Amino acid sequence: MNYVLQKNKKKSKSAQSQIVETLLLVLIVIAVVTIVSTFAINFVKKQLDKGNCFDLNGQVEIKNNPEYTCYDEDTDEMRVQVWIGEKRDVIDAIKIEVGGADSKIYNIPGGSDYVGFGGGSTDLPAANTERTYVLSNLPSTDHENMELRVYAVIDNDGEEEICDNFEPVNYITVCPST
Image 1: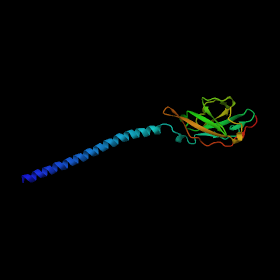
Image 2: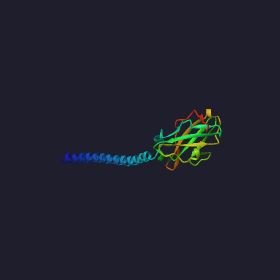
Image 3: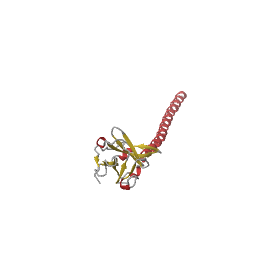
Image 4: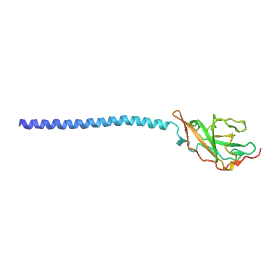
């Protein structure tokens, strides 16, 4: 009988150690998942909090108004009217690309070879407004084959990120005579 009791005690201890092992493994897995998810959630939140180019879709446009987006044959300059939407606070600058066979990029603000139309400001437009820039030293005088593109520039953790170009303007008229 003693033999049977000793054998049952060994089975009981063996069964208890397996349960303890299983519980310890489950606790370790829960701890690892908690730690990893904490870091992953913080990383995703940081990425979502900063501005990104996807948010700026449709927020920067060249207005194709023939009076304000046009080629001035008399001065060999290009007028470009740029509109910025409600997400203006995310945008640090814009780049206007004038292209054809050759192309040139104008950095606004801070670049050269441009002025504000009619002596106006060269700053970025406020939210939901537009501003016209007069670009000089064009890469070409063939306005019929030029294309205009505008790019939003945002700060991405201290690095400049240039957002993909938005709808280009392919047809540029001659400015009306003044």
